[in-house]
Image: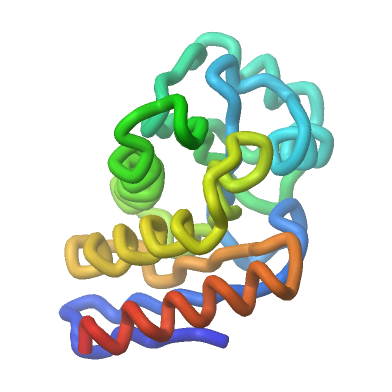
Length: 184
């Protein structure tokens, strides 16, 4: 269920769970799979906006629009987390190079959390819903990027993937185990 990366200077734990990203009270920050305007939508963005309340949309107005790969942060409002990082993932086959833009999302989000002294961050599978990114390819980009960033993190100690289905969790765990074995 988790991989501890102990050989690095800073101990980082990466977990893959099946669950609800709006109900992760032990995380300092969750990542929103945002649209460019940072407004409520379907999927993760809709769930986060509903749980956080209308103040979230108001807080997002001056930060929008964002470009694919960008990350911005707001407070968490009605969520059990102090913060929300909003990332605009690439639309697969439209925003190119989609692998680099997706990697930018994960890199920018975890760096933003680290810069603000946050220790625990939760990610959904960015760009895999309505944006059409194939799940396994997205998992490889996401986990590869975060494994590469782990050595540079000063405050982040826990990275959790909160996935909608058990099938998605199993896929992410398999990819994580495979990539982590290459690192050690």
